Image (cartoon, rainbow over all chains, first blue to last red; front, side, top):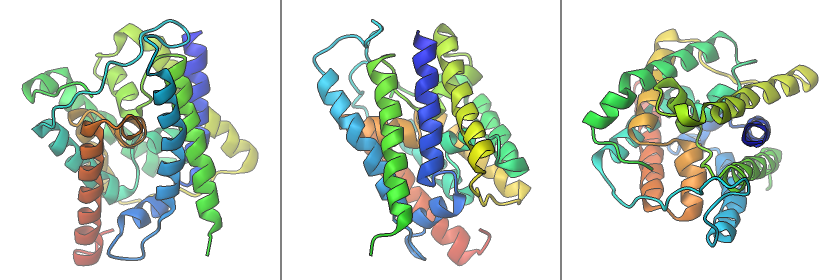
Length: 143
Length: 142
């Protein structure tokens, strides 16, 4: 059952990314290009995505488990540490250079052609380099 | 002057949000793309491997079917291999070090008013804007 709903969520996430324009790198780069021809589309995407999530967090705040009985996420950490800041900076730089973040990079794998595949492989490489050991060395704390 | 792209952005955004609601309310988990994938890549997510694989499989599969049926939207991705490699490495490493990406911090974190996620989002937006300024308007490489 968990896998079934995970697949439902993944499918909806992928289609949403596709419909929203998040898989179009020119729109993403246009959103980040505040000193050029700024494209506000991503604000609508983020706003549209945050709204149902905010309602869900509020409704679920009185529950301990999800509908299938698995525990809900622990309360968000509060430590604003260096890994959080540096990680976000590195991610933001990479996001701007090509216009792909992890979700859209995965969602567009089937039709994004060779550039998308190269980016995806490099992204996996970056994740491998960091790895559990690197995370421990850098003292990464849970989200 | 409302633009059609904004409507698609809003509809797609709502779909992304509902996807996050399903993953949270039913599975009790945060829908963060880099976390779900990263846990498979570095082995930290072995305990719920099936759930992760199902999510990622559908994340690739559903758009693949949609692209086949209705046609693939343009990704307009650069063909510069060096740029793709550097950007991919930065995104992969950065999201693991910072513990989240646009979906995890930007959507799931901000919506629960997580200070960590709000700070992370501000940092990656600022870094992205600065990178655009330097790479596009000063160096002219993108």
